[in-house]
Image 1: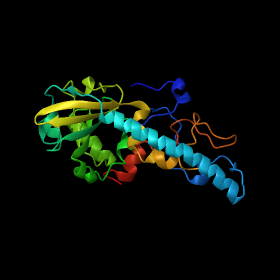
Image 2: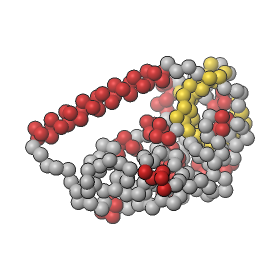
Image 3: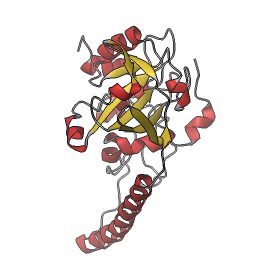
Image 4: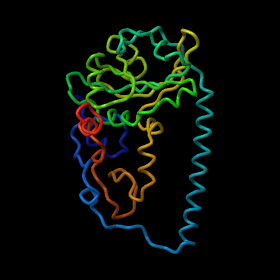
Length: 261
């Protein structure tokens, strides 16, 4: 099993980090989790509005930059993929058929560690968010999980943690390794475009690049105290916890959504 070194805690965490050694605070009450009485300064309404307006200018600039990045992404070239065969719930399936008749496919490459009962908590928690993906139908797209775990083990884990996505296995295919997610290695997000039976790879990311797929970080970053992790730049006295300590464990996810929930 790969452990995250102490140096990893000096930078922002990412959804697929495997961190079995973390100090776990998730599930505590707000009184137990909060360790500070620090508060933002209190000002009059006009001062507050001026500072909000200044921040809003940066937020709008950030939105325009994200629009420009998305425009550049749409102009990327693509790479033709071999005719991979993966395994699904009903048996072998061609990569082209994983699209389910759609032309666009997003794949989350879920980390997998052989002989582990509980897989990566980052991947487990991250993918537990996606329970209603039908909206992608209107965009001729689908979002699925592909993992290096054998299909029977992968489906059993899916049920154990209550995951709602469709899972496929690349255990007997070089697909996962070829798209940056080898056995025992990291996680990734890959996007593909299908033209008939020919599949092209159009985009890839890993690390914090996956945050843009999540609503959880976006919500937490709106809070005055933010993510409350050691790496985050915050005012003096703001609550700080060991990196990952507020993330749900795989067992937490199973308790909330799994078969025995």
